Length: 177
Ligand code: HEC
Image (tube, rainbow, N blue to C red; front, side, top):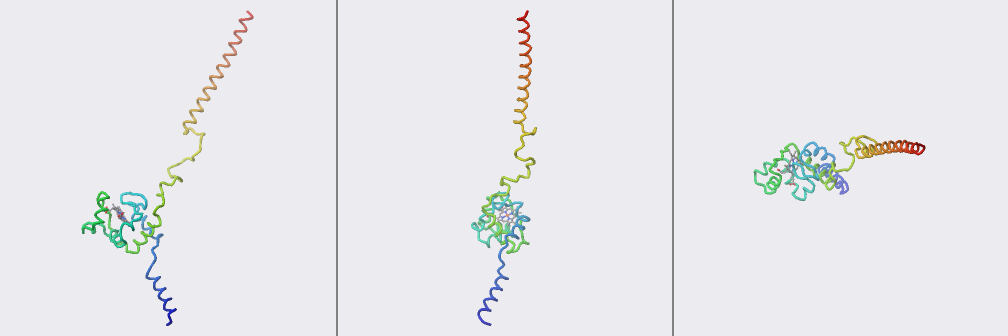
């Protein structure tokens, strides 16, 4: 076997063993297992997870996600610190997630870090049931008030003009008398 073949086989072997972390898979896992307490960029029950790999080693994170309470009971300083910073709310263990699963989640976190949280996006708002510009509706109070006032002013003007006419007539008749 020449060296060219050897490197080729080595490369093939490496791609099988070193499976690259998959952020798409991580997203699914994150949404199913973590999103109830964590957002990447916003604190919920648990801390915002953006930059978590700068705060802790990968080995620490793998161990914490699998069994944070065991680390806290064992007196791990960093684990105790986050526990106390988060009002001592226990994070549930995830013993069924293996290292690759958690690496996928970390890849997803890295990808999402720095993006604006979804619910801060200006549009579309699922709660909004009406389009923005709709002046001709009873729900548009300032418009309705202006409209009613205009109608009232026109009625007063009409009444005034009618009365003016009959007043003038009255004066005319007086003159002829
Ligand atoms: C029931 C709520 C809950 C769920 C679900 C949850 N966590 Fe947590 N997580 C927490 C809390 C609370 C903390 C703060 C540490 C503590 O109190 O133990 C935390 C802390 C962490 C930390 C340490 C963060 C830091 O800044 O030091 C990591 C990493 C983490 N969680 C990852 C995950 C991952 C990954 C998942 C999904 C597989 C997950 N968590 C699911 C509540 C949760």
